[in-house]
Amino acid sequence: MQQPPLYVAPWWLDATCGPGGWDAAIIQDTHGNPVAGLPYHLTRIRGLPALITPPFTQWVTPVSSSDSPGNYIPSLLSALPQVPILDLCLKPDTHLDLVESVIPATLKYSYIIPGTLSGEQLRSGYSEGLRRNLNKAEKLYSIESTTDINSFLTLCRQSYAQQKMSPPPWLSRVVPEVYKGLLTHQCGDLMMAYSEGRPIAGILTARDHHTSYYLAGGRTGDEQGASAHALLLDHAVRAALERGTAFDFEGSMHPGIANFFQSFGALPASYWRFRKFRGLGKLWSVFH
Image (tube, rainbow, N blue to C red; front, side):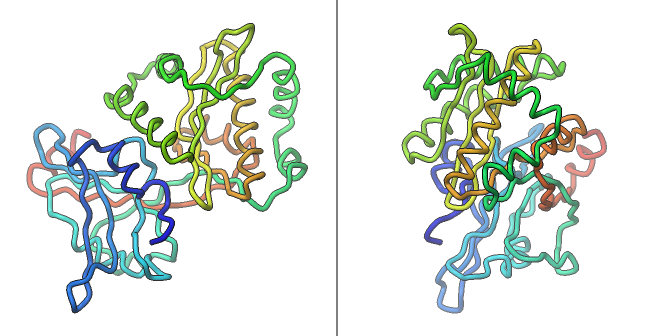
């Protein structure tokens, strides 16, 4: 594949899974040549071998030189290692016939703004409340590109604290590695909103040849943080449309977050979550 999507690029998998932390199911032709692959993160959960979606990654997708890599999905799923815990999110580029699937699947949703919109069409799709907040925020905050990954991580931790949640254990390890990769490959930005020189909110975005992605965000816990965060996303969406790419807010099954993304006029787009448990993995699944 000449231009693989962001989430299956080898450098992305190295950054998110760590050295030796990922592998791929491979399909070969009759001559033993690889024709399709599906990457995954191989780790352990509570001591049990687990095959899961890489950390900080919304989904993986088949990689192939063919024009229709989605046609290989049933074979690739069958080629995955049989482990106690399998939990893999997958975005096919074609319709997926679940009758052929060997692993149970459910739908998840992301929220997308098409790359064909103009700036005027974009703003007209915003909710009235969002437009009002953005008009105020534009007068209060300055937006700058930054390399201050430590301040960004602090804002991310504050956001988790606001939701009474603990940040994922990989946050401090994976996010800086991903940011280094984005800089090296010139395919991402770390933006912050400032008020009188103080960082109020920050977002990390990335892009491939057809989509820009909202990877992570953090903000202070006051009203300033909420409006600054919205202003940063507005800036990122407009930058994506100027490049001619769609903007993916990434998925969330949390109603409040989903409603926030939809206030930008983003439309739900489905992808698949495959889950299967074997042996002691079945016992683990009962409690998780």
